[in-house]
Length: 332
Ligand SMILES: *Cc1c(COP(=O)(O)O)cnc(C)c1O
Image 1 (spheres, rainbow, N blue to C red):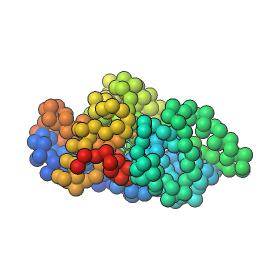
Image 2: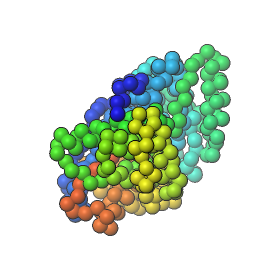
Image 3: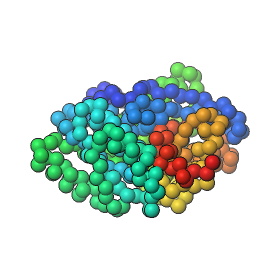
Image 4: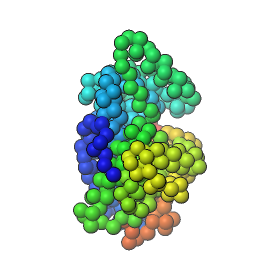
């Protein structure tokens, strides 16, 4: 597998660190826990979208675009990283924000990521939940073209095959880090949402001949829907990356039992997980994605599904910029 043939711009600090968490591992009394610090990708407080944007923005530049259009929730980490990347590359950024959370608080609608979107000067347009964003995007694109602009559309989470290449790269990077440090890892755990991270990781590992299991912890959709979404994108990404047929359906596993009442709605186990990682390891996680995924990891350890003697890597996908928007919902 060779990613060098794809258009790409450098946006992320790579490789991101792989760190052992001794105090958390001891506290939970299960496997040795490592964290892959993709919260440290460097762009505008970092996060997983930056790896994907290296390829999405690379393609946008290759096509001669001058305006990026993208979509996300009000507290989207993807939108924040896209807005920053557009600034760095001298492009305009049109953002379609979806009102996905019911009765949001004042801090949710003004603080955290959306505050940073405004600092980056992105043009924010707001839409009700359930909007057909394919249609909405066509309308925005037509408007930009009518003014002489050249739009490029990046879907939510940059989760298409081009964006997922960023996580193919992360999978390869992890295998290199394991080899350098002679680490025998038993499992990788990550949040899974718009699916590009999970799909790309699977392709990066399987396409490199590794059969290391990957557990996705879902944050919005039911299990079957999420697994099908990841599988479909993984198959397309594998084809694009030149390793078709390296992914099988049974290999895509999402556990969606840690979502609670819904996307972005806080849960007790998320609250516990965010405080545990902060107080044992000085690490910040977010309430929507990485906090719920960690709640899953912690529960697996308590249930004895990951045990002493094993080594588990948790992919830290970032999101701490969103913490401030949730200051009134975390119980400290
Ligand atoms: C977007 C996001 C995810 C989910 O990644 P997908 O590629 O959308 O599945 C996880 N964590 C954080 C912090 C995110 O912003």
